[in-house]
Length: 274
Image (tube, rainbow, N blue to C red; front, side, top):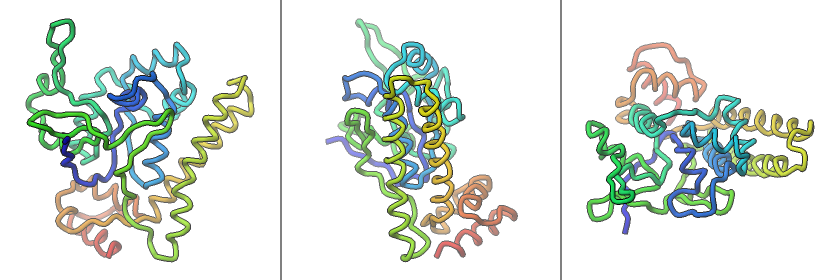
């Protein structure tokens, strides 16, 4: 049995290439829609997220017009998809500094190909806090002293599925619950609309571009709305471990003033989050 040891994160950094390929257990090729599906799921559950992708993988998918390549290009053009030559190191460092969960099936362990050992991140960067990285990673777990792929998340054709994901925080009041619940399903609808647009016989048609822009704008507005009307259940001990920069970002997400020292920021967040 592969044991997951992670805590609930405050956000996620997504290994977009890994998700696009469907993780370690998928064998039906790359699908850019899986990345937009992952984005929609995180957004509907009110998580902050960063999509990071291996640059050569992105350029190959665009050049060969792989499935979902137009949605992939739109994510990049709008600044939502970061392209990196060494995406793995960026993902690891961002997760540690921001206390973000990592969505990947990559174990970061050495591999053997044609009898030759290929050194990977655990060997290349032994100074990194690997026990903490393992805690933050969703998609792998420890079994008999080794890191193995687990079923924290999976794909079904173009859909990204994350059974263990719980919504971040709670709506401001009971009277808002039904509305927030309804809104949480809206990204799925928009994602389906974007898929339909991309299957249009003429991908450059004006209506296709208009639909993509409409879907993207609504998703961005929806993300801001849901963050504004969400309370994150943080206790004082957890808040005290955060940096001033992160506390100010949290205040901004909660619609609170960002001024003051660390103690004032913690008091402000605690007072608004009973």
